[in-house]
Amino acid sequence: MSLNEFSLIKRYFTDIGKSRFAPILPQGDDAAIVEVPAGMQAVMSIDTLISGVHFPVNTSAADIAYKSLAVNLSDLAAMAATPAWFLVSLSLPDNDEAWLDEFSSSLKKIARTFQLELIGGDTCQGPLSITIQITGLVSKDRYVTRSGARPGDKILVSGMLGSAALGLAHSQKRIKLPESIAGICLGALNRPLPRLELAEFLSSYASAAIDLSDGLVGDLAHILKLSNVGAKVNQASLPVLAWIKENKAYQYALSGGDDYEICLSLPREHWARVVQWNQQYPDCQLSEIGEICESGYTLIQDKQTIDLDDWQGYQHFD
Amino acid sequence: MSLNEFSLIKRYFTDIGKSRFAPILPQGDDAAIVEVPAGMQAVMSIDTLISGVHFPVNTSAADIAYKSLAVNLSDLAAMAATPAWFLVSLSLPDNDEAWLDEFSSSLKKIARTFQLELIGGDTCQGPLSITIQITGLVSKDRYVTRSGARPGDKILVSGMLGSAALGLAHSQKRIKLPESIAGICLGALNRPLPRLELAEFLSSYASAAIDLSDGLVGDLAHILKLSNVGAKVNQASLPVLAWIKENKAYQYALSGGDDYEICLSLPREHWARVVQWNQQYPDCQLSEIGEICESGYTLIQDKQTIDLDDWQGYQHFD
Image (cartoon, rainbow over all chains, first blue to last red; front, side):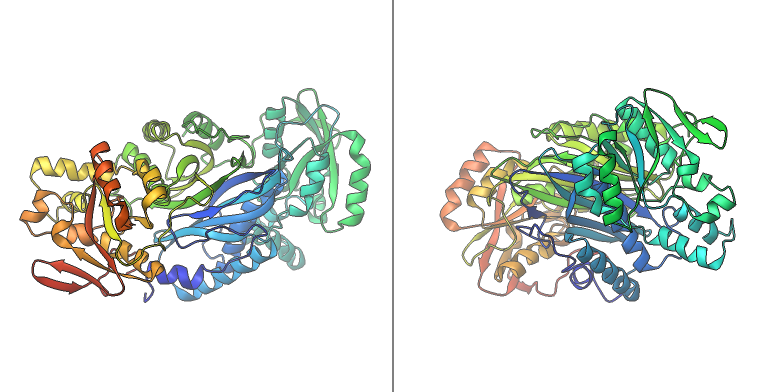
């Protein structure tokens, strides 16, 4: 306990990342000053991760740092924004230097990867929790919302669904996965990849987008509600690990949460762009999982049709 | 426990405040979109308040909401910025509707008063804590930092010092204040007034400014360090309640913390502006408390001179 708040910030929270958009006044004053270039808009989001709620209490400092930034970056990805700056508020039970070292190194690494720059924050003593407020930039009116889906649009998702939820169930010993699959799923849980590479594609072609944090069924419902449309989802088309198919464990992909993939609606005329995308970005495949319709919200499961209107994704306070 | 996260946000966190700078896309999507008008810069800060750390556990929801916004607004005040938007991340042990009602009403009231608009946030179940990220706007390069103080500048503070710290000591039964004074001090503790009315004055005349959250001696030291100067502070000039003078309890004003007043340095040639200010704003008097000098940091106390270099204001993690 030899560090006070100021030396702690100086040692662990200085020089984290570098934005393409250099701050006018970086951290170290009462507030940071940034300039939004002419013709651009700022995209702002905030997310808190609490120990024991959003990650198991034994999660490593590196994984916590990674995930805190990744979930916020994922919100920017869903809006088609480019990362610029972030602020961190960190509450820590004590100033464990080894923990802070690991947290800080991991934060630096991911911030550098995504050209995101730390411009301020605060630290205090309290239960372990991390709040990150992130700001991205987007060319004027080129952002993508949840409200533009139209009947006839295809519904796509990036990557795989349900892997993170499988990882969580495995780590909580609710299921036992084969070792090789467990590794993949724990990776998906602790190191979700924010899909920022989709920004240009979303801006140009998507009619709506959302990031999948609470589970596909619940999150897609937000698009439907705000766009005032319905949807048909084909269970057999969901991009999932073979383990899910073999074990008929589709609930992990439908409502498991923590995927941090992007779900989007795409007008049919842009279908050819998906094929091009999938050739160009083999690590971020887009899969068609269904279609936007006038009304109703259903899942086509084998030969059954299931009403999804009352299905609940993961919700806090349930 | 009948509300889920989405209905909770809809009921308690919609339509909070109205910014002079309307958001392009307000809350309800993955992120909010705002536009910084041409010729302006964004001023960004974040602060967390944790129950039992930043406020006593029995503090009312209304006072918690008030203080969470006020401490953030105070950071903007110190930079000479105008409030625009904020995001809230709220961690709550349960969704107590009476608590949320009171919290939300209080947040609305202060947001409206300061023309600040809620544009996003998240809620989750966990120990009671509130993080607010605030964004203000300032005309290009008209912000005020901690680094511009020059030898010969006068040091000024707004309002009264030490009242909030007295209120805390009284509420923790460490001291017993007369009833009339206790009322004033608890008001200062729970309802600090962010000094946003100083923005134009600071922009035009101040060489440096900081908001006083950790106590005068420690906070002024940040100005001295970043400006590479020293200071002489006259204890007898500190604006304090008569109770502090009578009881020689200047430590509350020197290092008590939680004042949320503005401390600024002012080149001598602008002194006449202070007299004008004090006539125009009788509720936010500026008092001269000392002078910036080349080096050293001393307090003139009766006939003694005390070295402040090793004096510590309130610090977390001590």
